[in-house]
Length: 355
Ligand code: SF4
Image (cartoon, rainbow, N blue to C red; front, side, top):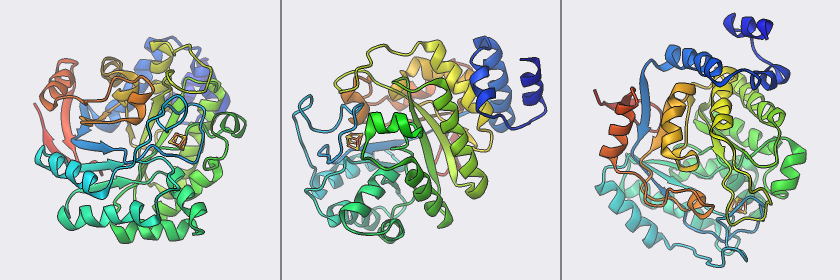
């Protein structure tokens, strides 16, 4: 362990074995190591943005075992929003001051390509400054397969229609054996990374997620983080890494044991320590609870996503997020946990600092 700590102290890159070994450290030591990196990168600031999540359809051609969102036997309520409904949602949210709309859908093969793309054009025509974060690499892969397009063609359509950045969803866990077991048929790890690389090569930014706490091992998590680190060395296009805690309800993955808070915090800290070339580590409170997200600030996290308003994907699986959080409450909670809330835009430019 002494050697490993020395390696961290001297700024050497850690490998899978090192990462797994870090879990043997006590939580306080890990927190201190991660906090040191957080402070070097961001001081006492905790970023958030004022955003709106829209999940326009839950009809999906894929069957990921961990998913509680798509319409199936356990969730027999299919829906697809019209563009008018989506625009109404955007209109209301703009009135509430959002700077970003975050649109993620299931893989719906009952609607055409236009349904996916025209909404971006409509939003941009009405709100040219509103940042559109949309289409995960899993959706890009689905649209390419469904409509006989190359990844390049789908990515170019995104640019033409006004998408500003890509969310990090669909990464789940890159290990091919685990992936095959939990989300067979969805975008492969290789293609997930390839799509993000191509997006970055267009001068655009994206995020990267990791779904943990299901059937993956600690080694699988470290392998996942290192694959992100390797791509980041080439492109520099990832803004944030977002570890997502697996939600246990309403799905077909028979994992009912939830992760301990300690395992979640250790994973946050280890992510911060290994992945130093991705600037921001986001504690997505929707899946970890707001209280644990606030504690995560001491374990490397410098971003608490946003007020979110309304989100259906994780709340279907048992996360307590449906109605979002009030801005004043959100800011107060960050302040009272000892950090400085800073509203940012989607590309991490600072908008307003709350002292
Ligand atoms: S996780 Fe996404 S792709 Fe998988 S079944 Fe659910 S909605 Fe479909």
